[in-house]
Image (cartoon, rainbow, N blue to C red; front, side, top):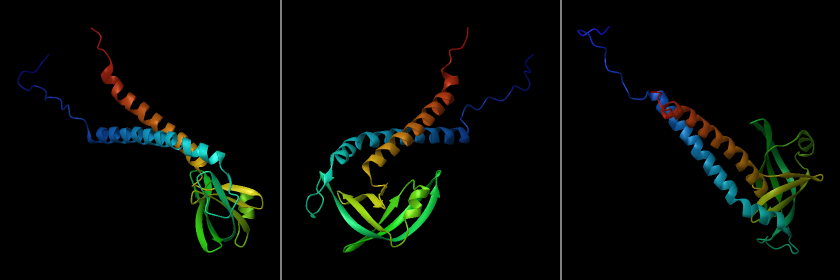
Length: 180
């Protein structure tokens, strides 16, 4: 029975602020995932070139197809934790200069040999230190093309999946065909 004297107020069809924020966050996740997957694809040739690089025969500057091996001494080591792994921030003293590097995913065994005064070897490829070797333990840095490619795949796939599933779940009720 309809009350003609007091009709029900019209329903507000505007989406709530929280729903708009949720949609923007899911869209951002979708775009982030697509961007990271694109960057993983674009680092593919760089990773392939890095795999094929050999040690330079002379002590000259490393070229596109070879890397330099430079002796170094560990000057300082700082540790940080995040996302389930430990990171080491290392300052290397090399002939004529010093440079800091970031070693993601340091293991307990690597922590044992990575200390101030330890003798190290830095592998320099295209101007960046890509691997630090201490006591025959090779530790890739965050500038290593192989590490960058693998990180982009994982994070990009997860972000793309979360954004896609979230947006699909949000818009799915509106896509249903009403039963007649």
